[in-house]
Image 1 (tube, helix red, strand yellow):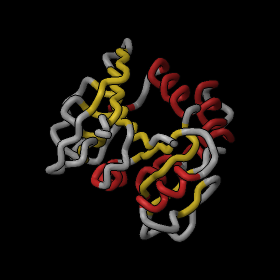
Image 2 (image 1 turned 180 degrees about the vertical axis):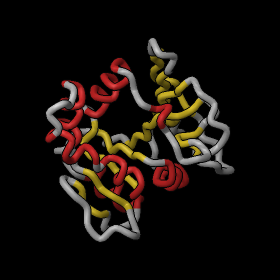
Image 3 (image 1 turned 90 degrees about the horizontal axis):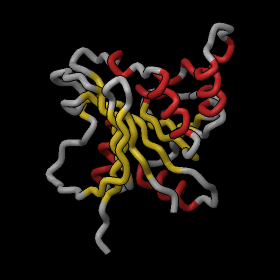
Image 4 (image 1 turned 60 degrees about the vertical axis):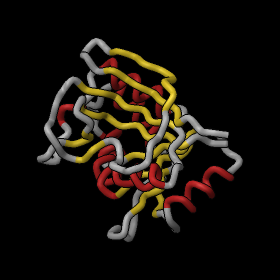
Length: 189
């Protein structure tokens, strides 16, 4: 069965964006960007909320920029053909290999898990991830922890009254002080 993963950059105090909505502190250096490129290779479909979808629209036409780095071109070549499902109540159309979700998140994940294709079902965006977590749909949490305290904003982890036990699967420190943490949800039975 396809895994559902939630992977984003996170401040040490637990936020994906600061109180001002900024996330410039997550701009990856070459080593971290190479890691993200390698990680996207294992993704079969990416689920996004409207905000993240709009942020990632840049990549739809980035390859037209002659000054784009080789790493940026490699990312674009992997990201653009990747199927994407966008959850939005305000968008009426999306671009590229994206489609608007036709049902709820749980129904969409169930449908995608049943497809006979390879690759993880990646979730991007804290709001969408919180909904998936509340329904017990996330199999792995992957946090790229940045050495910064932002003091508030949108949390990476959903705030809930439900305990979720995790098993550490992988850690990786980077030269810039960023640490990657990958945990699997410990399922009983």
